[in-house]
Image (cartoon, rainbow, N blue to C red; front, top):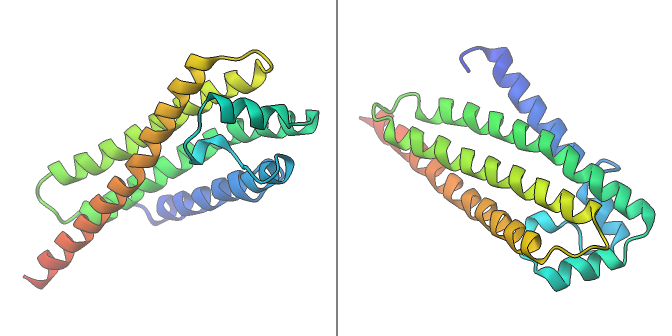
Amino acid sequence: MKNKWSKIGSIVGFVIAFYLVELSPWGSRSIEALNGGYGTFDMKQYDVKTVYSVLANYLPEGFIRIKYYYLVDFIFIIAFFIFQMMIATLVYKNIKSQIPRKLFVGVALIRALADAIENILLYIIITSYPSEHVNLVNLSNIFTQTKLRMIPLWIALLLIGIICNHIRVKN
C-alpha cells in the first residue's frame, strides 16, 4: 500500500466495518439487547448448551438481526485483513528479513480464515434452528478460539516490528 489514498481507504473501510459490526442496527450491541445481554457467539467461548439456550430466547426479530450480523461480519473480516496488511507494510518496510513480515501476514490470514469459517458455521447453526448440530457448534467454537488466539499473537508481532524499527532507526 504505497499510495496515501489506499492507506486512507483502508482506515476508512476498517472504521465503517467496525461501525457495522458493533454499533449499527445489525451490530453486536443490537444483538446483545435482544438476547438478554449475551451478545454474539463469535467473541467468546461457547458450548452446545449455551448456544441453544441463547437461541431459545430469541424472538423472530432476533433471528433476523443475528443472521444479518454474521453476513455483515464478512465485511469486517475483509476490511480488518486489509487494514492488517497496511499495518504490516508500514511496520515491516524497513526490516530486511521477510520472516517477521510473513509471520505477521500469516497470523492475520489465519485469523481471517478462522473468522470466516466460524461465521459460516454459526450462520448454518442459526438458520437451521431449532435443529441442533452438536458437531457444528463444537467445530465453530474451535474456529472462534483459533481466531481469538491469533489477535494477541498479531499484536505481539506488531510490537516486535515496532521495536525492531525503533532499534534500526537508532543505529
